[in-house]
Length: 110
Length: 131
Image 1 (spheres, chains in turn red, yellow):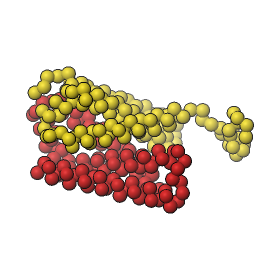
Image 2 (cartoon, rainbow over the protein chains, first blue to last red):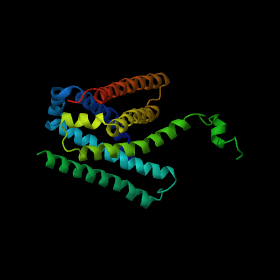
Image 3 (cartoon, rainbow over the protein chains, first blue to last red):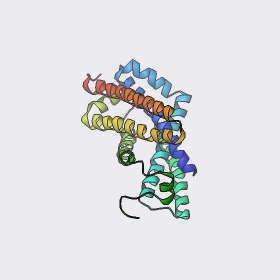
Image 4 (cartoon, rainbow over the protein chains, first blue to last red):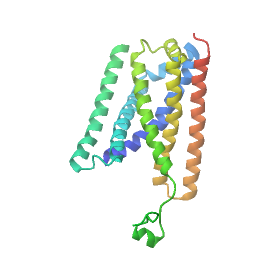
């Protein structure tokens, strides 16, 4: 239940925040060194990093719960126990992947 | 139940049958999701493998076909999948037909407009000069 709601919520977040930032980022890269610097400044600010962490978590959560939905489309994993474990794994997986990515990113850039 | 008569008894009594549409939308959403699974993993892996994330490195990355082509596909398929996905939520929660139509048309225009900006931005990088 919660994972199904999360799938929609993260999908909507990715549609607006995710694609919005992707478009802004691509536009900024083409603006040259100075234009990109103003994007990087916002992206590397505390609020920018929090938003980017939110977008990457949304991406991993949506990806994993998407795999769950595709699996269930084939008729598998409807048994209560299996279904519940699969749902929990999507949350555990998305949090671990997001943490690993950002520990690496913040560790490398510093 | 014979072929061609898939309405349930209660559906038949109420005069509600199949919508006769939406199957393609459902399939498209799933096919694009598999494409985005690959493209999304490609994006994250690429960003992790780039030596630096400064403007020059990113331009060189997207200038090469190996960067430009997957990124163009990610933009096109990403906006398409988003539009399909958000439409499902709108169709589920907006019950008044006029509002539903207006919101869906607005989202279509928004996705096409912002998607076009993203493609322009990418083309400017790919076909512009490096540096």
